[in-house]
Amino acid sequence: MAMEEPDRPRPSGDAASRLAGEDLGPYSQAELDERIALLEAEIVRVKAHRAKAAAHRAAADALFGKGGG
Image 1 (cartoon, rainbow, N blue to C red):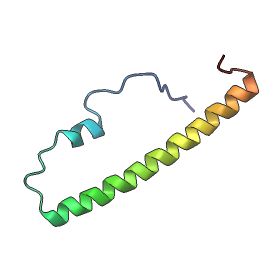
Image 2: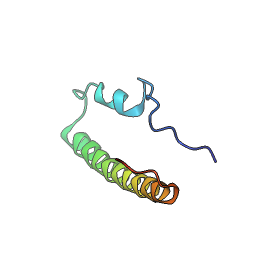
Image 3: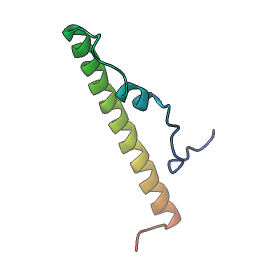
């Protein structure tokens, strides 16, 4: 299993960048509401992953004695 490289820059064409640049004009209010719900669910998923990664990192730092200061 390959380790992730969190410090590596993301390509400029990643999904979030494409979404941020998309023209929202053609969407109806219902479609925009659906899009908002999907994005809010994605935010929850990303935050949960971030918390899991932070806990994993803290456990590794504690195990290997890497600390700040």
